[in-house]
Picture 1 (cartoon, rainbow, N blue to C red):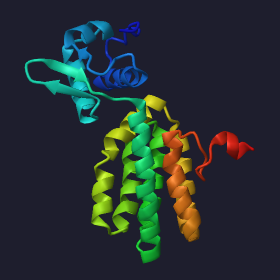
Picture 2 (picture 1 turned 120 degrees about the horizontal axis):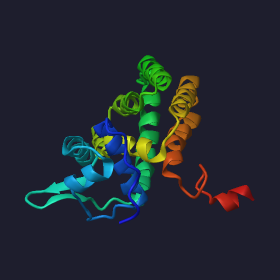
Picture 3 (picture 1 turned 30 degrees about the horizontal axis):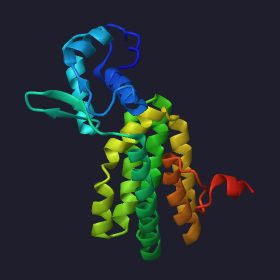
Length: 225
C-alpha cells in the first residue's frame, strides 16, 4: 500500500474521510480487491470507527467498494477508464435526448434555468454536493424531455449520481466552472440551433471523459494540424 496520508483533524467529518478515500481509490493507492479495515483506517485518520464506517457506507453507494458478509469491505474493480467510458456513453445518450427534446418542443428551459441558478448558489456557498445534485437534475430533465423510456433507462443505468460525485471529488472541479459549463450549454439550447445544441451536449460530457480527440473524432495531433 502507498504512503499513508497525513492524519486529519480530530473533529473531521465522515465526508472528509470519504473524499480522501475516493482520491486514494481513483489514484490507485488502494488497489481493486484490497480490503479496507475500519480499525486501521480509524487509526490512520486519527478518529473513531464511527465516521469511517459512515464513509465506507457512502463509498458503497458510490459503488467504489463492496461489503462481503463475514469478510469485510473491499475496493471494487474500479479503474479510471471505467469512468471515462461511462462519459462516452452518456455523451451519446444526452446528444440524442437533446435532439429529441428540441425537435419535439419539449425542452424544459425554465426548469433548466432554475438548475443553473441552484448551481450558482452552490458555488457561492462552496457546497459541492448541492452543485452535483443540481447538475444531475439539469441533465435528467433533458433526458426525460426526450420521452424515450429506453434512453432514460440506459441513462439511469450509468448510475449518474454516483459517478458525478466521484468525478467531483476525484478531479476537484471548480464549482464556478460547473456553473459556466451548464450556462453555456443552456444558452445553445435557448438559441434553438439544433446541431449546435446537440454537439454542445455531447462535448459537455466528452470534456469529462478526457478523450484523446476533439469534438469531431479526430486525434488532437491531427486536429492541431
